[in-house]
Length: 338
Image (cartoon, rainbow, N blue to C red):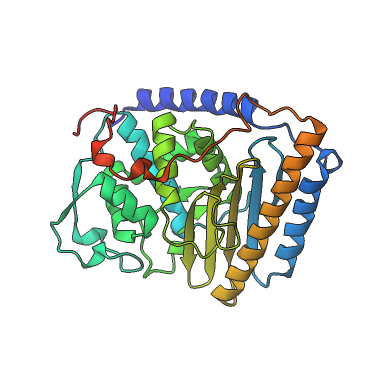
């Protein structure tokens, strides 16, 4: 366990890192009139879509090359649903980097870990063991709630919350593990589009934990098998690293779209939906609009001679999807297990 002194030092270092990151990767807030036409059109368009939705919505889109962003209710805390699994994954990789365990560390399934809302580990016998690498894949790619609870127990919910706070996320919090049989899951797992965009932007720039960890996390997110929301209207050859979340009246999707000339981060959260199909149609329309306006922004950037906000900002490639294919063979510098 980290003592109070170490935790204080870590918080101070994280705050400094966050300040430096902001200084080099984000454009200072500009007046709406200063934004180029594609950003203004995206901002007004997504607000029009949100106003027509008979539900609550919160959105943010960040262009990674320029720092321009568009949003609606971006800082409002919303039910995170399974998008909360991204912060859980981040804390797992932070502790991997600290050498607390490695990807081959096996975690034993307890009865208290089981949640039947999503995934198949809930049907496994108590006492079964799984490698951290397998739990990560199950948590993200098939959204297994039991795998999530096992990883939360491994790294500690308190540490997840502390790390998110250290990274500057203001609305992201887990007050319990994943319990989908309880209505309180809506208030127990919270985040905002602004928080998710901040986290994923650091990941896209390979600055979340470290470069190796960022690449690994992106590769895991690229393997998400639930592709009916943000990816649905996009061209099939455009990589997207994303995580969905759903409840009976809630649909969320957050991700990094690696369009070659216009990489961007997008987070959409909806709740109080009259039907999930309503939410799907809304997210499809918004994803299509964001992709189209990002392409226009890339053209504007070329014509205007806009200089990237940081060295290499226009080159944010997606790693090969096979990067994570055999994590047991990766030379993980984080050290041995506990």
